[in-house]
Amino acid sequence: IFFAMMILISNVRFYDDKICFENKNYYYDDIYSVYYIESRYNVYDERIERASYVVLFDDKTSLDLDGFTSIQFTEQEVLPLLSKKGISIKSVTSEKELPWYTE
Image (cartoon, rainbow, N blue to C red; front, side, top):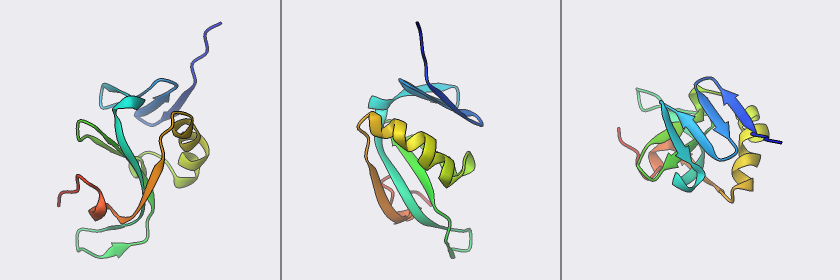
């Protein structure tokens, strides 16, 4: 019996062994880190209280789940899968604290 767990979020798919988006497969071993961002800055450099999760990959690609799903869905469906893979979540105040942040 073949069973594959899949969580579909718009154009992002979380499988039991990989994440697919932008027509590319990323395996869980390719994840550099996952961050919970408490807030972000708008184009006027004003801080906005809007939380999200961002997945950073070793190739410096990032996947901001804010554009794809809600915090609640991410916490209920995606984080348990990442936790099963041994991936911990780091917390930062804003996207400006991410390792690969560029303005």
